[in-house]
View 1 (cartoon, rainbow, N blue to C red):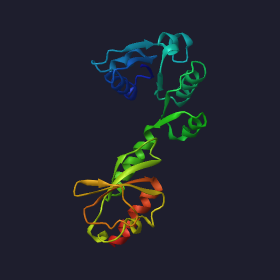
View 2 (cartoon, rainbow, N blue to C red):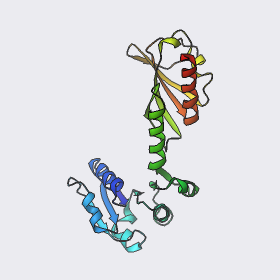
View 3 (cartoon, one colour):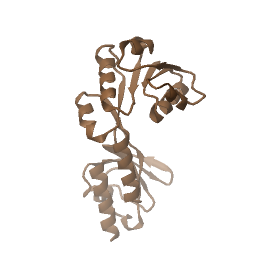
View 4 (tube, rainbow, N blue to C red):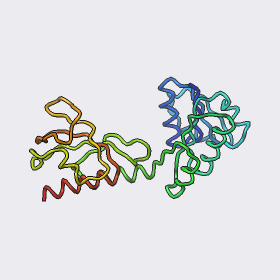
Length: 219
């Protein structure tokens, strides 16, 4: 597919390489020619120098034939305008917008864009890692509103049911339970054994409640 990456900063350069490695035709747009020096030598896509708000620049990048566009500059305003142009004028449905300033995330959400907020997501993940060793995040879709976590059942929860573990945890859903190398879909009445690995989908509030539940039992 034909992909356009607007912004050749650290994120844009890495994204362009990843898309290229997947076999896409990739064009990178930036108004600073030195920015293209960030591209990995392995990258064999196109580069277009110029202002991304220019119709001539966007059409040189092939926006009229693009299957997807990522606006990943460090300007939320620029990202929003370019994404809006791509979606409304050139009818590109696969548009992703980088949110640079978390305080402006609401503005981008008002447009209904697919948003990646690297600052907010990074802060949340750092908080999770620092805050608890009882659970481990394994997947975080969107911008971290919901995560998938692994929990290893401690000895003092052996014999209790999964329902007991989750009863005090809001917004947590069990996904899978692995015991002696075999996975299954767990029921709330499933009795837990030490060393069971439970995969749980939860909001940030839900996983915090679950961690408190585990900590309270340990106390």
